[in-house]
Image 1 (spheres, rainbow, N blue to C red):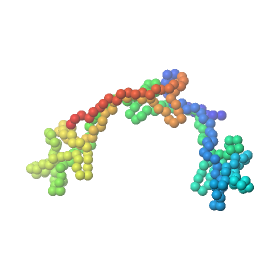
Image 2 (image 1 turned 120 degrees about the vertical axis):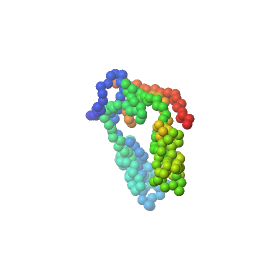
Image 3 (image 1 turned 60 degrees about the horizontal axis):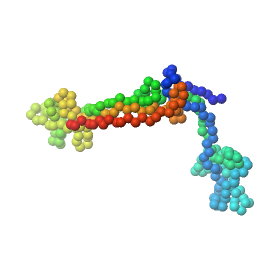
Image 4 (image 1 turned 180 degrees about the horizontal axis):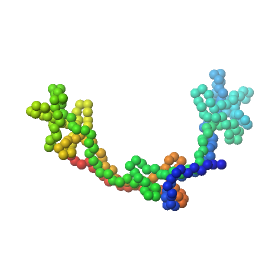
Length: 240
């Protein structure tokens, strides 16, 4: 007797969607016919497979000699030897376990949300934006003792100022061995930042999905959900 398993979920109306899986009995799945019990002395080109009642054999072409069969040996494993699996024909087979009936909530891709009836997934439009990474580095060269300089946020491109106040060094976000993004001048007040551009996304709707062996269905019956194709709005990176 099969077991019916229903996962915990909110109370559904007849118009709501769920992922359903029908019960499936376990079964043997054929892989290939058995191999012969060959030894080093056998020239296998002179033998042919012979399905017989009981365990099958390989028969020599002169008809006087036979060799038994098997599904496992050195360097191979085709499953269990199932005798007379199809009439008099033996097969190597592996067992595929069954499962009980079940239901679960549909899934959405990351960044999407289920609609009220759980049939589709929607994503709101999101504009592109600069994402700060860190303060710029100085335009250092081997002559600079960086411990004697301090960062100075000023209108325009920021600088490093020497502690004696007479010398300055410019700033940048990319150099030998590092890349912190694009230098954004006065991104926050007078404070410059290195930043990476995060592109925006257009609003989009797609069908909800189900785990393997489940199908999307209304509480009141099965329905096929058509593919949705929404035009992707062009979202451009602003010009620096």
